[in-house]
Image (cartoon, rainbow, N blue to C red; front, side, top):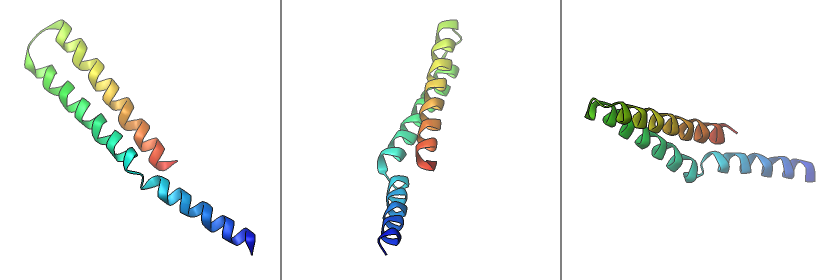
Length: 73
């Protein structure tokens, strides 16, 4: 009987981890960083601004992928 209760408790912990608001806040932050990077890309025609926008988009992509991985895990 104890084994059944432990397995159900473990399942509830997994469900609660997927519903953790911190994961979704990180996802929204990543999307916001990507959107700012896209806006900077079209702001002006400058090599430095293009590099900054590319880095911002890569950082946002990393944040988004990290949050999705944490949700699925």
